[in-house]
Length: 255
Image (cartoon, rainbow, N blue to C red; front, side, top):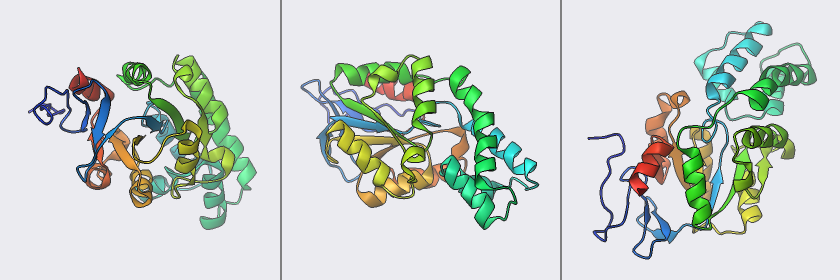
């Protein structure tokens, strides 16, 4: 059995990826089937950036380790998981207030920014299959935006460099609004920005805490596998409506 587990949907020659439940209906319209068995035509997509569209979490892992070690802290797995969904500002506040790092949050933020900015401007690549999927969504007249913990400035810089910024109506950033993905506010803002409704909109995410937030808020989610998921991937699949191993897999199922 292949990773994608490609099967046919509903017996009507619809293209369907068994792992992701996204398919073309008999009219040729891109649609999806939720975990509860409800089928909707796809009108909007909200994408996370890091680990979902952008192959960047290995960079974040290295940066987190370097920052923690520079402040005399051991980068344990539990601590790394705690920091992963946080914005830079929230991470700095956590290190200073909760863990007792002596440097003020402003200095911690400056150090993180110094380490990450060159990667967003110069080197971080899109995940394989992303450009093709974005083009397909555009052809299907699906509205798209980004909801990310990364700043809007760095998000737009990376998307422009990789040639896909024009696909997105807007970028909604937790870093700029002072929110986090442990609350659904950023997703509601993104939903408002593309003018679609919960029924008909998919949110692509890679992190367990983000998918959990979506589940509790009633959004339909697509979990995107990333190496950083580790043991949490099985937990993510339990609560996500849809899960894919890669965008290449998704495109194979829609071919």
